Amino acid sequence: MRVLVCGGAGYIGSNMTAMLRREGHEPVVFDNLSKGHRGAVKNVQFVLGDFGDFDFTFETLQKYQIEAVMHFAAFIEVGESVQQPLQYYENNVSKTRTLLAAMEKAEINKFVFSSTAAVYGMPDTIPITEDVTKAPINPYGETKWAVERMCHFLSQTGRMNYAALRYFNACGAGQGGTLGEDHRPESHLIPLIIQAAMGKRDSIKIFGTDYPTEDGTCVRDYIHIEDLCKAHLLALKKLDSESELVYNLGNGTGYSVRQVIDTVRKVSGKDFNVEETDRRPGDPPVLTADAAKARNELGWSTHFPELETIIESAWEFHNTHPNGYED
Ligand code: UFG
Image (cartoon, rainbow, N blue to C red; front, side, top):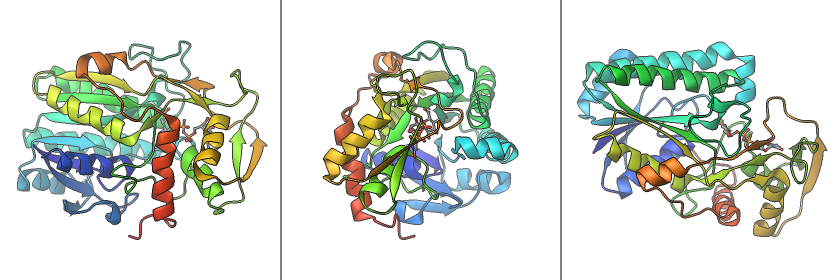
């Protein structure tokens, strides 16, 4: 299938692009390189452009005879979204509306959307199932939920089939450790700990040690990027016959911040300083997925559920790309 990968030069988009290609699809990467890296896109058609530009997006969809769109181009920093809500509404909601309008005009009716566990806010019930009340606690989660609603209503018209995939903590590196996380500035736990292990930062800070968890630090559900991408392929296939798909993507196992730090120590063989600091505002104590729906309906399974394996792949990426992507 000819798939436009919007945000295909970013962390998840570049892994998705490589997997599409590996599986015999024809991905076309569409990215404005505001966050992504040209170096993360290899041997694939690349279009430099912005999905908020209706005319150019429509022309691109037509030119490459696109049959489905996977959309990863979003701003993803929770803290930044609190400071700059309008930028988040503009990029994540308004521009996505433009992309969907261009798809509608081009009569492309398959859309796979990158959503997030942040749509649930601070749920009472753990692990989280898809039907839990959606109560985002920051603009980031709210904008992702707004797009899900937009897709829902569009699907009701019969003109769009969509899958909303709610990621828990995407991590690790795909394609043998060659496609990994390179956010600038970096804010995600695993790459930050690895940078500390590599001596590229003085320490790793633990944001809060007084949470109601076993060791007092936050617990998250870390899911390997290739397992995550695999679910997109399965969802895309199912859109042939279904108009609305919503799935949590996680392993269902929680690891605390301290456990992640210990695992990086073990994998890297390096020691580094750990600083215990105050809580980061807006962090729920525990977020783990109930992903039974994806397993049962998509036939999805994870190949890299072990945190150690996930961190080994990330360690490989950071060691072979000590300064991130070159371009
Ligand atoms: N953390 C630290 N120190 C750091 C960085 C993070 O202790 O220097 C802690 C956080 O407080 C949190 C955990 O490590 O408890 C994971 O933090 P990340 O920033 O790596 O990830 P989040 O769980 O905050 O968010 C991630 C994605 C979001 C997504 C969310 C869904 O970044 O886009 O998962 O669960 F919405």
